[in-house]
Image (cartoon, rainbow, N blue to C red; front, side):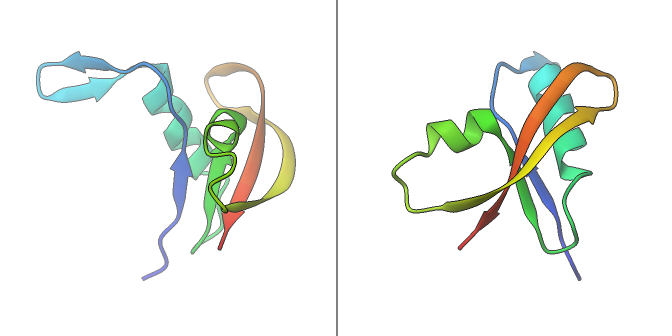
Length: 78
């Protein structure tokens, strides 16, 4: 099974047993930009893990469905 991941961080809202908010929606939209077997992260995540040894490739600015503005995204690699 090829799995893809999208990673973003930000404020989330608890609504009963559900988690929501713009950060959750952004993560889902970022995941949609990943290839099978890939991990795509927002600039926010890339900046927060600086110095961790994780390498990133710039894949440019993207529009995310239902979210205003352009988001600069990166693929993570080992």
